[in-house]
Amino acid sequence: MHDLLAEAKVCHLGVVVGEGDDAHPVVLPTVCAADPDGPDEGGTLYLHGSVAARSLVAALDRTICVTVTLLDGIVAARSAFHHSMNYRSAVVIGRPRVVTEEIERARALDLIVDQVVPGRAATLRPHTRKELAATVVLALALHEASVKIRAGGPGDEPADVEAGTWGGHIPLRLVADAAIPAPECGDAPVPDDIRTLVQRLGRA
Amino acid sequence: MHDLLAEAKVCHLGVVVGEGDDAHPVVLPTVCAADPDGPDEGGTLYLHGSVAARSLVAALDRTICVTVTLLDGIVAARSAFHHSMNYRSAVVIGRPRVVTEEIERARALDLIVDQVVPGRAATLRPHTRKELAATVVLALALHEASVKIRAGGPGDEPADVEAGTWGGHIPLRLVADAAIPAPECGDAPVPDDIRTLVQRLGRA
Image (cartoon, rainbow over all chains, first blue to last red; front, top):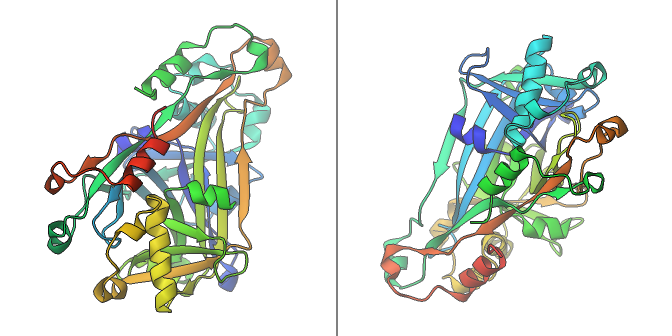
């Protein structure tokens, strides 16, 4: 599970908004970061967002669900019924803790930056007081996560295999293209963390 | 929105399971397919699943949320605070209709196969009665979908730009590698639909 969480660039946060008959789920993409050595049972999953974000406010006193999905391929079976996707997913359900302690908050925000660009947090200036005040950090215990993995080719009916229909699977993966510097960067060299990331997620 | 939905290979379905104080969201990856000309207001989004799937059963009499996210890049800003992702997402919230009419059910299941491998449904044998009986098809009206898009480089504080920190963005995209035929296929040629898909999602 920690390998899967370490690889993901986005997760989907599900919260329930509204009360009674109006209660319904809202699912939004966001970035999360796992700390296997975090203070919660099984390790800690950190989420963050603006104090003004409706989905984060809805998460504060309720059970939430965070789902991480890595898409690994398309399973082209011999029948529509057995078509599928290859993927690795983790589903974490729990009541989040609001992180208030300043050292843990700063560490969580650094982990979230490093989740997206490993090594980048250490190259940036410290968070300002204003930035920290505008940000909610939530922590979720990882002890109840459930992981699902599907890999490999189709599981077809013998009759469909005998009929000679083609079946197989198509690997999919997320790749990075060359970094595009902001216009003000001019000819400044692309930093090592960014170059390493592009190389690791490169096309090769 | 329809371009975005046409491009997505997976979506995330959010449902509320449980009642009262036990009610909580569950978010699972699945495949959906949009029919811009479907019978619902704004077009129809189709979902399917096993009649035994807990998430589908939970969706039957309740409002659900389907979120489609296409990840387009990493925004490496000059501060942790302004780090972000480039993405296109659609969030569809509504009470689903169970599709019972046989022609619409078969069409929806074909659209779902074609969502993953365009053109494939027409090359496969018809659905069997047993397969259809094992499958729930849900339809969601698309008239209340909300679309969000973030693109381009970072939006940094002027002081961070002046400080000379590097900022920019890294494009990300999903690519396909060559199809892997099931062992029984031997040297049978890879069908056109699969070859076209791999080419379109290729590394180039």
